[in-house]
Length: 91
Image 1: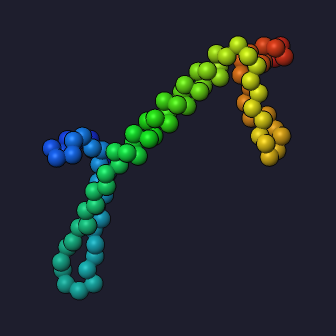
Image 2: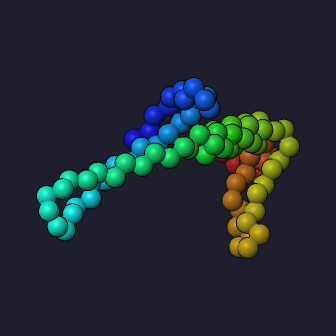
């Protein structure tokens, strides 16, 4: 479970909450282990990567230059932008 909350000393944080029941071998004691993990920075990085990928895709798709991306290891075409396809008259 994730939640977004404000902690007064440190500000807004995104926190992951996990809980697990721990079984005791002796007795009837019920124990639950609760773990909180601050994932704020990870979420910020994921968001920044998403924005960067969107910008790249927009530039790639709208460029009026032919762009061809080839896998260096296999020599296979990985991606072609629409302008390149129009130059080849492929639709």
